[in-house]
Amino acid sequence: MSERTPVLIVGAGLAGLSTAVFLGLHGTPSLVVERHPSTSTQPKARGQQHHVMEALGYVGLAEAMVEASPRTTGFRLRIAESASGPVLREILHDTFLQLDDITPARSADASQASAERALAARARELGAEIRFSTTLESFEQSESGVRATLSDASGTRTVLADYLVAADGHRSPVRERLGIGTHGRGALGHSILWLIRADLTHLVGDRQVLYNLQNPELSGGTGVLVSTDHRDQFVAGVGYDPETQALADFPADRAVEQIRLITGLPDLEVEILDADTTEIGMHVADRFSSGRAHLVGDAAHTMPPQGGLGGNTAVMDGFYLAWKLAAVLRGEAGPGLLDSHDTERRPVGELIAENQYKNAIERSMPHLKRPDDTPPIEDPGMLLFGYRHNGAVVPEPGEDGELLEDPTEPTGRPGSRAPHVRLTTSDGELSTIDLFGREFVLLTESEAWAKAAEQVAADLGVRLRAHLLGGEMTGDWAAKYGVTTDGAVLVRPDRFIAWRSPGAGDGRDLAAALRTVLCR
Image (tube, rainbow, N blue to C red):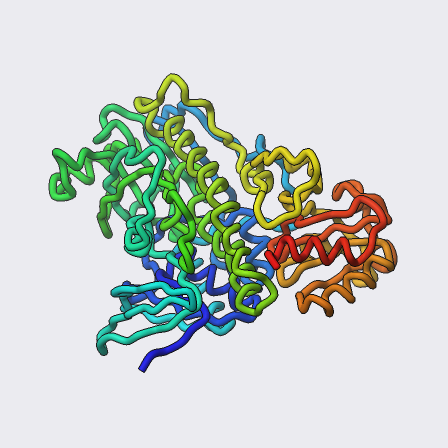
């Protein structure tokens, strides 16, 4: 006997669990299967940038990420010979874009382990079923759905799903079975990582730290020291050559020697809690979709850790894909809407992965720099809020398909993120960003547009809500959105602008725009 689920998600990491959470936000249940016995127990990636926190706010998880963040006095990012110095360069976050005028959200610093636990719990609350120690053995697609064979300790079973989401990591068996190749910079290097316990209070103080180290005395000439959730635990790592070295070549005495070089403390007392190896590379899938299967997270793009956007991009993959899957499953959209997953997310994945490659070269691997390598965009605000989606939108005349724009000077054009504007209401202040997340939204000061939106929603059977600004909800929004007070702006559930009318119009224009975006 077979089971049925609207969406089968393979992998319960950041990407898979985020997809399940955001599907739940839109009322669509899912089945998540994970071959490991639990969510991650390792520190791994950490930190939730502001755009992620906007998305997590829609599902009530932003505060949980803040609560899971270590209580520290700040963050220090340095390029140095050792954690004790000399410092080659300090990357100062106060020189980055000041985001108060771009977003109402704040960042968090929860570890991947903490974030995955919170996502899993919320996914279940929103209707997802999560099965650990469960493996996808095989699957096949047809015009009507996906037939998958799963195995666990009790045996094998068949699951019928409308759609399959591959969130199964950088090696992605699903991607391989789909015959999707990858491109990019390839493998850049390999590292040995130790989880250590040591008292570094006098060195790092009450801060979270990330030191990228360049030192010929270190194995491979490179190293890293990263804080964890515990003030006396750190991840320390060095480079190694897998052709000539292995983890066994670093016994306890040599490991301690390397860790002392990393910290610059020759007499440091160190307890090694765990050790592992990892490959640092940059790979992007040639396609993010194939039939009814869609790639997210590391299955779609892997990147060096320098820049800290890998895990954030994985979460956002789920955010941007989920509303489209839900709309198609509800019958509001045609299947063609899902083609925009590749059209929109692959260019962004390539942009961010390439930028993190450049960060890696600048911070950790200068010996790999090529003459034609351009400097990275170090300011995350540009990448988080400046990228555009040129797929499920109604382009305007003269659209140049530009992938990146300055978020401090928003254009309001279709394909760009809806700008943050502070609004005043009788209940206090809120942001335009707070109005999005669950449905299509029409922003307008025109009663005629608001009535048209109500009629279009009923006629098309689409979740569409008009917010009539300028009355009890006021703010200087029209200029940032590029319209007059007689105009209207259609915003997708993922807070990207789908269409706008600079001035007066009627319901036929709005209905035509929605049909175009939803591929109807």
